[in-house]
Image (cartoon, rainbow, N blue to C red; front, side, top):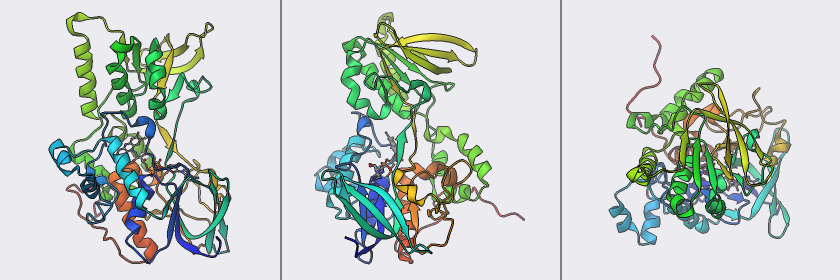
Length: 437
Ligand SMILES: Cc1cc2nc3c(=O)[nH]c(=O)nc-3n(C[C@H](O)[C@H](O)[C@H](O)COP(=O)(O)OP(=O)(O)OC[C@H]3O[C@@H](n4cnc5c(N)ncnc54)[C@H](O)[C@@H]3O)c2cc1C
């Protein structure tokens, strides 16, 4: 196993590394491998709710924004599945979320560089300056451990569900993160009361789903958020230009403290709810209340949950709430709690052997160059590229599917030391950067 030094080894096969594998596929000059611990490609399976769709146009597929003629494009996927006409008649730019997953599975199954059921357990730098890396990989089914050598690494490990301390330590079947919602639908339907927490897209989709099934199953339903309201994601055209290569360039060059401040003020660019989901929810509320029927449904903004405990009789949980604008504390009871409390960047365990080599900032975040390399503490002939955990350096667009292809173009050009995929400028109408006179 040890003799071949791969040009690039990828850790994780989510959409970002899968897109990279697809764009590298036609290039014969490089030898690459990608590993993922899942037994097949599976994109946020707990949230593939019927009726949900991608929040970006289909052009943000794995390859189109770099090369629409690449055989792993979504349009080619549609052609192979005889769905060009149905998609044409759908008259929508966004594909259903479960179709995005199926499309990515179709691509992953054809890409020989992608290996599933394999977990990268450690990455060891070899040489001083670092000449290459030893990548230790466990085959999860056989428990066999293999070592591969790589000149360069790309981390595409994504994020992990984030549960606030106040919700931790409860029974998993009753109190769970939105990422596992579809595993718990039966439990929800059996419950007498359900509380959904959070006001992002996931919480809204789950609330809509539970609202639809409420009458049939007879539970009471609450939707609680600390935010001031159930606000829409900012999706108007000129706001979308924040998800452009130009804005990333502009943002990257700002001082770190300013970046942190700006990013925390941009939540509605990526954390709000799609307007069509809000409309669906409102329509359901309106229909279900026809004739003044009393609905056991409550929507509460401005409300934080500061603690919870299991009721003594075991029939559910007591949530300690506070309406923070009026500083009023109160309790609510719920049998099931769904936490749409977001995700945080994953610093995988396999980076442990690289801890001293990686430059971390005072908040424990790794430092990333503009062209997506980890900054290292000493000289290295090898590069560790990254796809995730870069919101602090590259801003709001760093987790966006539409920008991932642009990032992959830059990484491929860097890897090969020449321009394979042109990185074009002049993509937006507004100007963030100015020249001082
Ligand atoms: C429900 C949901 C919907 C979203 N919808 C959109 C959208 O519509 N538009 C948009 O622009 N963005 C969307 N996003 C944000 C973003 O595009 C996705 O999170 C996307 O999946 C990120 O891709 P990724 O490749 O970084 O990571 P992931 O998709 O999270 O994949 C990471 C992979 O790494 C693997 N892995 C981790 N550690 C190891 C290891 N040590 N060894 C082997 N494998 C490992 C994991 O098994 C996983 O498969 C959404 C996010 C969520 C949660």
